[in-house]
Image 1 (tube, one colour):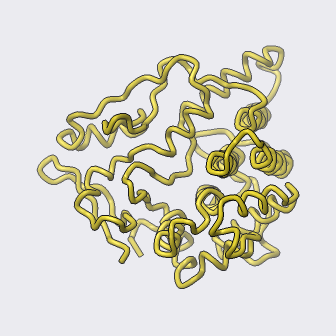
Image 2 (cartoon, rainbow, N blue to C red):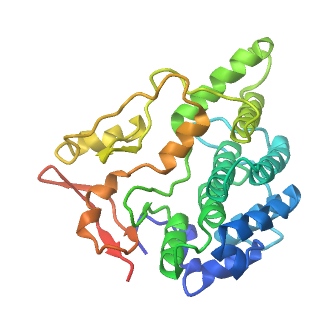
Length: 324
C-alpha cells in the first residue's frame, strides 16, 4: 500500500470480489449493480432508516469495527463546525429521506437521479460528520455504488472502489471525471449566507453547532429541489470546458508549486446565481489536475494515483500505477 494511506484506510477490502460482497450487504445484488434502472428502483424502495443503518454498517466495515461498535459518534472537523451529537442521527435520517426523494423524482433520468442521490449522501456525511473517522471514504464508496454500480466493468469497479477507500484520486477512462468526496468549499459559505438571510432572528442566539444543523438541512433541501441556494458572487469551481482545463480555488496551491504544468490554466468565476447543486455536480465531473499526465497511461485502463506530488525541474510528477 502507498505510504500515505493509514492502516485503517487499507483499501484491500474490496479486492478479490470484496467490493461486490460489500455492495450485496447494502442490498445491491448482481442485477442492481449492473443496471442503473434496477439499482435506482431498489434503493428508492428502501426505507430511510434502512439506508441510515446501511451507512452506519458500511462505516464500521471500512474501519474494521464490530457490528456492536458501528454507531453514530460525535465526529468533528478542525476547519468546519459540525452539528451537535444529539442532532447527528436525525440529520442522517433526513439525508436518507432526501436520498429516497431524489431517486423517486420522475423528472430526473436514471443517471442524473443516481448521481445527485449519491452526492447527497457524500455531502451530508461531510457536513454532519456522524463518525469519528471514515466519513469521507464512507461517502465516496456509497456514492460510487449508487451512481455507477459495476456498470463500468469488473476491472474499473474494483480499481475505483479501491481508490475511493484509500483516499486516492481516481480518473475516469475519458480523463474528465474525478471521483471525490468533499463538497466545494464555497458551498459552506453559500449555505451560511442563506441561513443568515432566512433566519435573521437567530443570529447571535444559537450556537455554532446549532447553526451547523441548519446548514445541513438547507443543503438537503437544496439537493432535493425544495429550495435554491446560490453560490456567492466571485466563487470559482473546476470543470472541463471545450477541452480547457480549469481548477477551483482550493487547488491553486498546486499550480503555484508547479507553474509550468499549469501555464494555460484559468479559474473562471461561476455565473451569478449558480446554485450550490449545479456547482457541486460540476465539480464532480471536473477534469482533475492529474489528468495532465494521464495521456502517458495505457488507454482504457483505470488511472490510480499511488504517490504524492513532487517537483522536478518545475514539472508536476505523480507516481502512477496502471491497473491491468
